[in-house]
Length: 161
Image 1 (cartoon, rainbow, N blue to C red):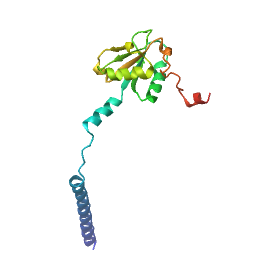
Image 2 (image 1 turned 45 degrees about the horizontal axis):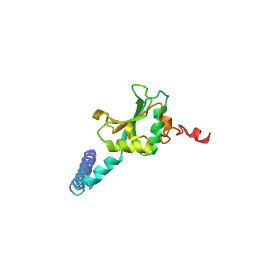
Image 3 (image 1 turned 120 degrees about the vertical axis):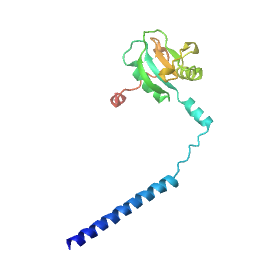
Image 4 (image 1 turned 30 degrees about the vertical axis):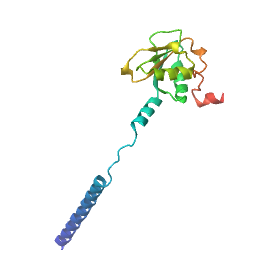
């Protein structure tokens, strides 16, 4: 009697495994045959336009004021710039400058215009290893530019003060 029960259980288990295999196989066939992904329908013009709209920059502190680049980073992000890095410039400088890193003067001009920086303070120093379009180097005169955002609160508590 035990042998019959074990045989029935074994047969039932095999049937269950067979059905499970059949379900998995049909699911695989269905997804691979009938649900083919469609290629993205983004025209070359749209792709170029979206790439050109995002200006990736870094902000470098060239005046020695501690924490300044971080404050400016937050404000520039609110203005729509993609600030990917902040840091210190290799020396202190008097004038705030913009360095074009890719030969993309148009992006450097947009950054300068939005901050009120004269075009004569845009320099080109190509460095494609940085993966940015331009560098904003804050000189000792950064306060002369009212459009450079430096008064962004660093915490919610500063909003209520």
